[in-house]
Image (cartoon, rainbow, N blue to C red; front, side, top):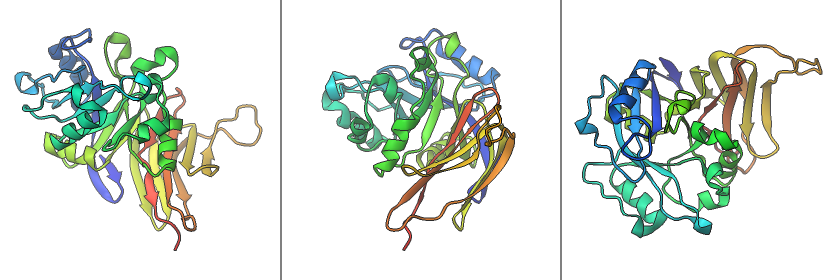
Length: 302
């Protein structure tokens, strides 16, 4: 369970970017389901490249399966987009000839939500990502892109927020082979784990991204943000440029920042005069694993 901005909801562990032998993955869909089920996941999306893995043909073994795919239309400078479309219908037809914006709009019209996958690995700038309309989220962490040091997308994510595009974020395995497994996931706050409930929560941004730490409470009321979470050594609130809130940063050398293990925080976030403000919390545990809340938007001071 999670206390999610005034509501008590179930917390479902989700893998939202996963490949199988239907594209370039090592494991069959049946084996992928077995592995994620055994590792405590509740929700699984097959996002094979340019291919819709039909979930009606699979035994989910209690997992909520989301019929999805990864789309690769050409983007700026000839770079292929990597766009995860979650929840496409049985009638969905993938056609790259309609262009990048076309495939996004078509997927959204079909009932899907589209997530921009690992933009740093692709080489896209925030300006280029901002040019694509109808996105619903961005990947802040992607396991399979860590091998060349491009697994994190925090700066690009914040630059989008500064442009007024305040997207929530997912963390994913982007699993192709065993060494990608179980390093990043998304926790969905939903009424139940039925596919409609899970997709409704995702489309509303009711989720957070993590590599390990867990949130048990998120609250924002009367300009005060509160959170409870599993033990962490670093707790930082990020907001518009040159502003932020340092709750805890490890300092073993003793230069004054401290090295307290935190399990909660309370931050007063006053609105900015004449300017909309965004805020997200970023925490890190003793193993160096991060978790990120979706940004919240704070209206300008009147």
